[in-house]
Image 1 (cartoon, one colour):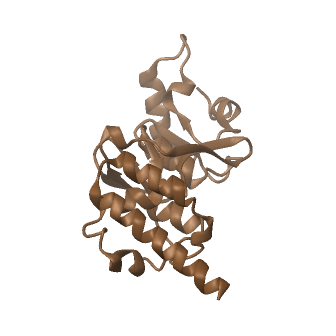
Image 2: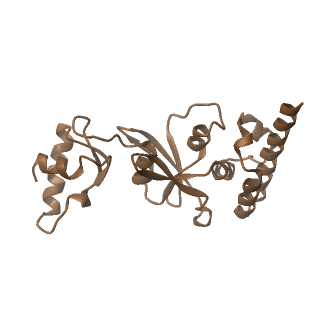
Image 3: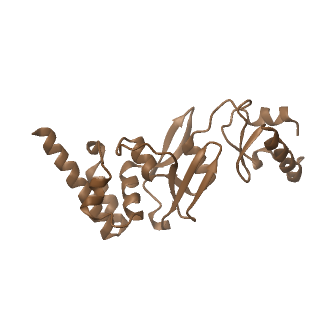
Length: 212
């Protein structure tokens, strides 16, 4: 395969896989060798085995951190601090894209940034939506309520009143209080349910202060 052929095939794709380059006439071993050479000369950027982006000189569309996160670990969705920050629920900036998966937890460093994965049980793998991220693309992202509860589930002592306060939560009026409780009950965890009640108490307190 020539470089021009590669670019013709994937120039419109922010990310591509080895499989996208294969046809009955193409030997997968030859493709892998070429990809290795093209990685060395900057034609392509490797994110992990089998997952690539064209180099800056050739790519027409920049990959979004959310789609990278989904692609790096299949069976994951963006959640936790990344979603909370994106929705203005916490004041801190985040410097890694955080996600949850039913697989192993881990950390991935790529040329496009850092990606953190936390493990949850398969029965807790819900509460996410397909979110548009531009140019007709989408990614799996937790609702703000599920991101809060994923955080509570994964952190110790999250059911203490101080934990919710130390998060310095803001814009709580954007949280659906009933959905938060409903989701918390679905976790089947007293700790998570107490956290949800603490968050709703903070939300109500803020509403009272605003009225007063």
